[in-house]
Length: 89
Image 1 (cartoon, helix red, strand yellow):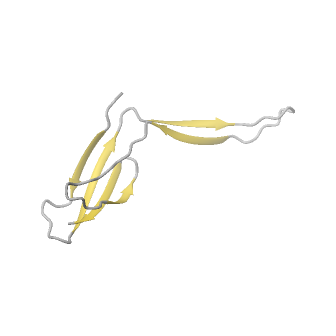
Image 2: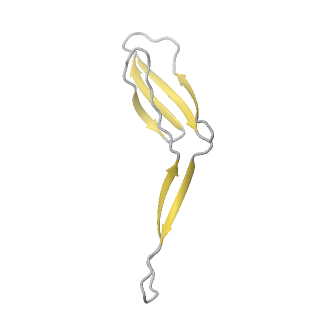
Image 3: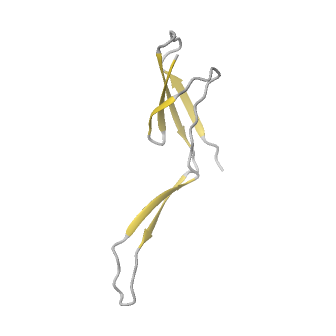
């Protein structure tokens, strides 16, 4: 199994107290696998429903952001590969 990867960057190196801080994280996992399941129902007379498709992800990722000051990081966006978090300095 591949280990997940992550890189992260803050929008500045120095912050004044009360200033907003933005953290952008790029992450992924080489062995995460999306899958689709298609269902069709057929009765005894041979009539079938339209296909219905559902999706799932095998080995999903969870991103957690903490820092050593205990500040709260709020997720602004996350598309499954790039996440943006915000906190106050």
